Image 1 (cartoon, helix red, strand yellow):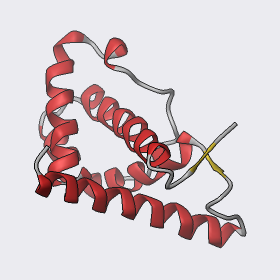
Image 2 (cartoon, helix red, strand yellow; image 1 turned 180 degrees about the vertical axis):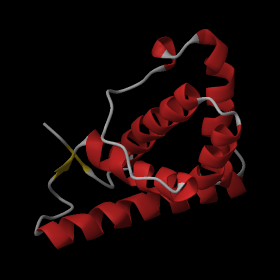
Image 3 (cartoon, rainbow, N blue to C red; image 1 turned 30 degrees about the horizontal axis):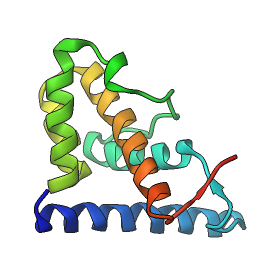
Length: 129
């Protein structure tokens, strides 16, 4: 990944962390409390809803490339790369242009998993027990 791509990804991670912190503050909780994958999924869902003009979806089970149909794997990987380099909204917008709801759903779930893992790895969030 180039330095510009890393900067874009870092900005998205910071935005997710801030959004989770703001939600927790409004609920009277703290960022030090364990963060569930569902919280990251919800924030990705809000970005998706802005692009789609729809309501955020509830958290779905974790997704891996093994569970994605083979015909979608290449597209999904390309869209994940777009999300990390150009932003989640751009990746969702490109996925929507395919008119493939399975791809859009898989992207949403995959991004939630990847961003959650990155936030935990960088000690930006506490891991849920």
